[in-house]
Image (tube, rainbow, N blue to C red; front, side, top):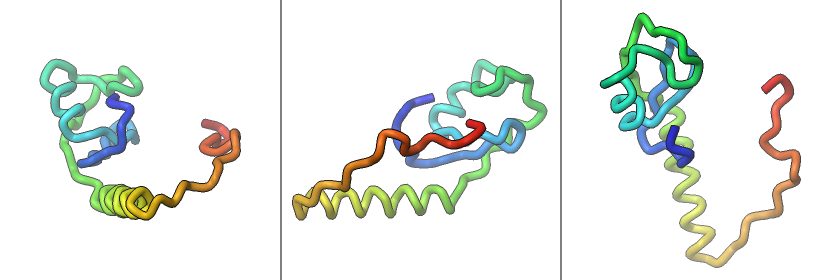
Length: 86
């Protein structure tokens, strides 16, 4: 929805997708559907994903350390991030 790294990731149990808390709260103010699938949702309960949030915080910390120490990340192959069946 935001195309940014999450700060407060919230998984939606009904559609299996994860959203940024502020974005999904705003969406739910005017919609009863999943932003990813368009299907109507029976449950709009928001439960934080603490594991994903911790991984993102670790990533931010590692990235800040690399920038501070002027270490460039390794080159990423063009096929990186491509999953079979995605």
